[in-house]
Amino acid sequence: MIPTVVNIVAVEQVSAFRLRLHFDDNTEQVVDFHPFLSKSYHPAIRYWLDPVHFSSFRVEYGELVWGDYELCFPMMDLYRNQIEHALPLESVA
Image (cartoon, helix red, strand yellow):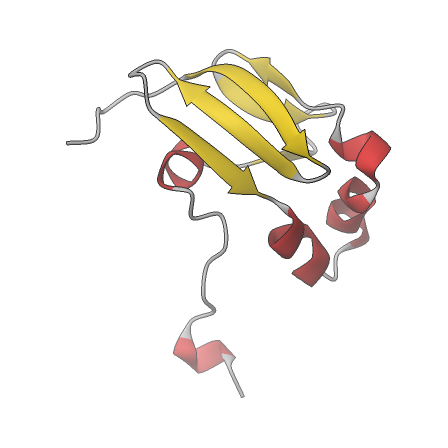
């Protein structure tokens, strides 16, 4: 059962775009951010494809963030290791 409130307590960078996230319920996930970042067309997101920029992440109030919240993810997406979402069928033409 997934707790109703989950926080990140520690992060380790395991490769250029992969982070091991440690949650306060003793769960951990290794999340690969490269597919999400590389598929984006938005320049503000693609900015984080630079390994130096990407490695500037931090944990703030139990959340994983970059910059002044320029890049952040919903906690449950990180907890489930599902940061990529399929497009709704009606938007695929």
